[in-house]
Image 1 (cartoon, rainbow, N blue to C red):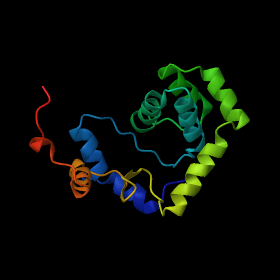
Image 2: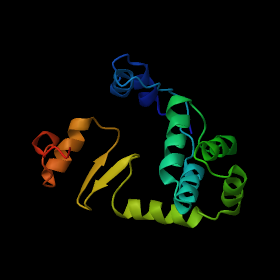
Image 3: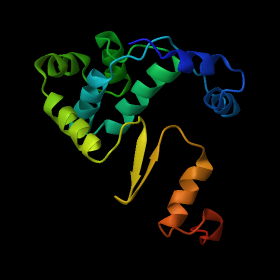
Image 4: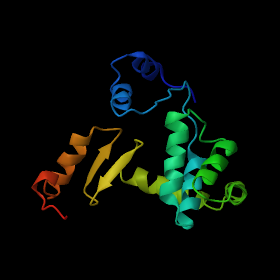
Length: 159
């Protein structure tokens, strides 16, 4: 699906907040003209979760998408992410082709819609507060404080 015109224009802005944040953090951010379907990537993540490797495959998928501009629907991308995460790419491909994790993904999408979540990413804290979209660290700190967490500077040093 092509990006909406307003998103394409915002991405050209040298002051685009997402681009500036990536530069500040020393990250490579590849912008593209399409929004790929992420359903297969979500199935790949569920495959990784079932094998205790959700974190590694998630990191590999994010890097391939944001830093390398790869298509998250392409089996080649997903197979590479599986390899990066220490998973069997052939087993991953069979699971995707067989639809093994499709019901889990569909259940997650249905639950998100029932909760009113329409943005990726969305972070839900303590089942009470949600942060939608790519936000700056102060937004997350504010949410944690609203939930009763003490600021990091106020915590005892564990060392």
